[in-house]
Length: 539
Image (cartoon, rainbow, N blue to C red; front, side):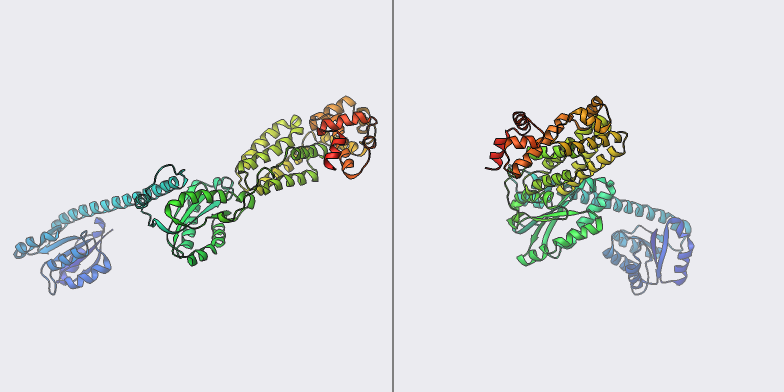
C-alpha cells in the first residue's frame, strides 16, 4: 500500500482531503497531515511517504521550497501541488522539481481522481523497475558467487600448465587478496559424504552447506584480514585466509577443533579438516591445495573427525605393509575350516585391516577393493545354495562400501555383511545342511590323526556317503578329502613350528602312515616340502 502525506495550512482542507476519497480503494493510506513545509519535513523522515499532496502558499515554508527539500531527500516521491489561479505562473516555473501535476482550487473529486490515476501509474512503474532491479542485482550476486566458486575450483585444481595473471583473476572475482602476504589454506571434508550428505534432499544439502559456511566464516573473521570460502567438491569445502601475523594464525589454529564440534552440532555430520602450511604468495594456492587434499584423504587411516596437518605427515613404504596373498588365503582357509562364526576369522580380518591401516599410501579405492575381495571369497563356499541372496547382498555391499572413505567403517561393513550372511544361513532352508557340515568339520578337527574315510564320516553323521560328499562340496566349495588334507597340513605346520620331531613322526601324528605321500600333500598346499618349510621358518 502506498503512503500519502497531506500538507496544507487550512485545517478544514487538510481534514477534507483526508476524507474526500476512499483512499484504500486506490491502495493508498494517509500516513500524516501537516500545516506547513517545516512540519512536513519532520513527518517525511518518520513516515517515508510515496506521495506528497501539498499546497503552494503556506507560512514558514511554502510548497515550492518543500518540494526542493523533498527532492534532496528522494527522487522517487510523487509530488502533487494544490494551487489557486493567481499562482499558476509561479507554479509552472517550479515544476522543474518534476512534480506529477497540480490541482486547482477549489478541489474537485474528478480532478483529484485524474491526478491520482497518473500518480499510481508512475508509482507502479517505479516499483516495477525497483523490483526488476533488485531481482537483477540478486541474479548478478548469485552469478558472481557461482562464477567465483567455478573459477576458484579451476584455479586450485588446474595442473598449472597455463599462465595465470593472479591480479587479473582476483579483480575479476572481486576477491580482496594481495598478491603477496601471509596465507593459510584448509579443507573441510565431510566424512563418508556419499553415505551421509548424499542421502539428504537437495534443499537439506544446501541448508547444511550454508550453515557450515556461516560457522566457518564466523570463526575466521576475527583472525583474517580477508578470506574466501568455496565448495571445491561434493562434501569438500576449501577456505583461503589472508592473515595479519603469526599470533592471529596461532589463535585460529587453536579453534580448529571447535569448528569441527560446531559443525557436528548443527549438521549432525562428522567432518575432518586438512590444514596446510603458511605460504607467502597467492600463486602458490594451487600447489598448497593439492598438498592439503592428499593430507585430508589420510582420514582413511586416522578415522572420523580428524584434524590432519599437511606438514606433519610421515611418509611410509607401501610395499612392506600391503596384505600378502598368503594372508588372504589364511583368512579363506579359516572360513572354510571353521565357518562364518569363527572368532579366528574376525581376528584375521582385523589383522588384514591393521596392515592396511599401517599403509599411508593406499587409496580409498584400494581399501574398498580389499573389503570386496574378502566378502567375495568368504561368500564363495555358500554360493551354490544361496546364490540369489548372495548376489543381491554382494551388490548391496559394494554400494555401501563405495560410499565410505574411512577404513574403520569399511571394516565394520565387512563384519556386518559376514554377520548377516551367517544369520541368514542359520535361519534359511538349508540350516540343517549347514549344521551337518559344521558337525562334520568338528569330527575332522578331532580325528584328523586317525585313518578317516568318507564311509566312516557318513556313519558318524547318519548319512549316505555319496549324499554327504555332495552336501559338503555344495556348502564349502571343497571336497571332504581336500578339507581333511588342509586340516592335516595346517596341523603339521604347527608341529614343525613348535617341536623338533622328525618328518616321519610328524606324518604319523597327522594321520599319514606313508611319509612320502605326506610330503607330496604338504608340498601341494604350501609350495615346499616339510623339510624346506622347516629350514625356512626355523633356520
